[in-house]
Amino acid sequence: MRYSKLENKPRIFKSLTGLTPPAFLELLEKFIYAYEESERKREEKRKTPRRRQRGGGRKATIGTMADKLLFILFYFRFYPTQEALGFFFGFGQPQANEWVHRLTQVLNTALGYDQQLPARHPADVEQILAECPGLEFIIDGTERPIQRPKNQKRQKEYYSGKKKRHTVKNIVISEKSSGKVKALGSTCEGKKHDKLAADEEQYRFPEGSNIWKDTGFQGYEPPNTTTHQPRKKPKGGELTQEEKDQNRKISQERIYVEHSIGGVKVFRIIRDIFRNHKPHYDDLVMETACGLHNLRVDYRYAA
Image 1 (cartoon, helix red, strand yellow):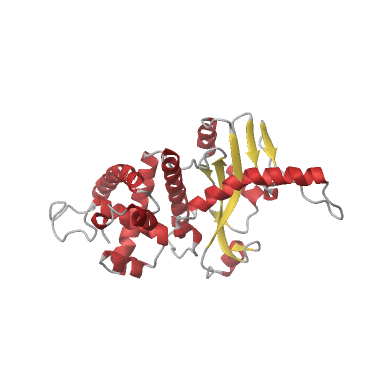
Image 2 (tube, rainbow, N blue to C red):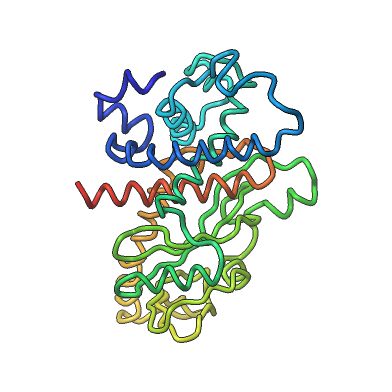
């Protein structure tokens, strides 16, 4: 699979990468810079001097920078096994594994250069959210399936009673008007309650923010904000018609975060059972997929 064979087939190109050709080309500029920076750092870490000049010897299995970006986007979009991935690009599983881990970090860095990544630290979150017109946000927890851990203790920690499987979880804060993911919490065990996970992040919202949340965040009330949450049916009682109507309105507002999470899960590396075992890679791919979703949103509004 090569970029030169796909660049003039926009529908197929978007199906294979999740991006339109113009979005791909914008990202490619940042990707080239990020890759060169990554190579420079690799050179600095070398413990022995080079025996040949950079670029000498056997040619890279993925030749052009456009093909490298195509490779990692295809991996995120379809999440094939590394054997299958190598087959599509003309090499074996060991090379596929090496390229996957090298280029995921490069892609993440490129999205950072393009200012598409969600904020991760509390101080950054408040600053990023303050730049959003309207100050209307939706907070939610999203779970991703993982393989069953071999360690019995980890099995209990990561088993989600809600999903009836082993999962990891992230707290997501989306801007209501655009659907962009503005903040992303740390990847934690799926068993953890949404409110507890949000409390541990210690988010600070700009004064006057409106926050839509579901009942999983019962009791989550950031200072100087107004929160909107559906009312729970009282034990042994019923909701009034007015309360039901209000719940319906809140649910209609919260559907925007489902659209945001659905946009992130266009990339099957987020939706399918996660198979990679490299430490912190599950967190890296979630952050990167959110950045790709934000880039897609930019081009959706530009269309």
